Amino acid sequence: MASGQVINMDSASLVNKIAADKEKLVKLKNSIPDKEKAKKETAQQAQESADDNRRAANNLSDNSQDKKLARKANSKAGDAKSDARKARKAAQDLEDLYKDIQRLTEKIEKEQKKLDKLRGIPEVRVQPDSTHA
Image (cartoon, rainbow, N blue to C red; front, side, top):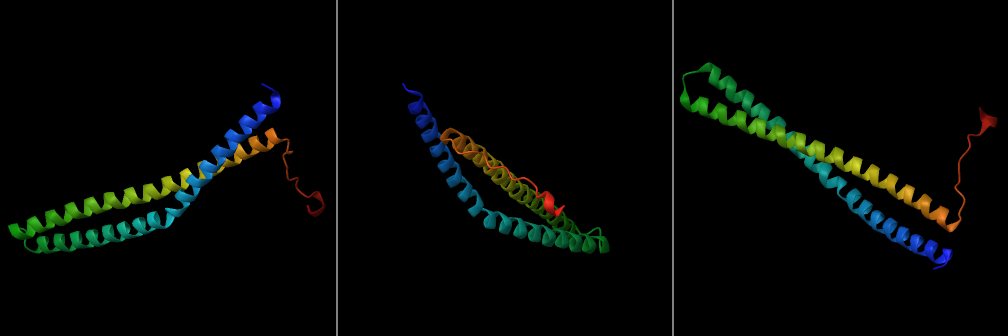
């Protein structure tokens, strides 16, 4: 097999990888609004649950022997804990999404540089303009 055919095979493989990665990147970027919405909603719900828990605890402190109020306070505390966990998870999911987007963007850039090198396109390096320093 000639050297040109190997380069074409490598080049075609890289083109396919880049296209697949770009498609994946678009999907990831399209999921940002949903993740941001989930983060905002879960944070809001966690705050509301914490407020409900605080009110239930205050009601219980006024009448600490009331079993019904004690159960309600306990339930509200569990809700607040659960909602806080959901809010942390939603925030972490969004953070992970941004990291995945960054990693994939860097991977695409690296693959594109490799492809350009295979095709004989010189790498363009930007030099700082010393005349305006």
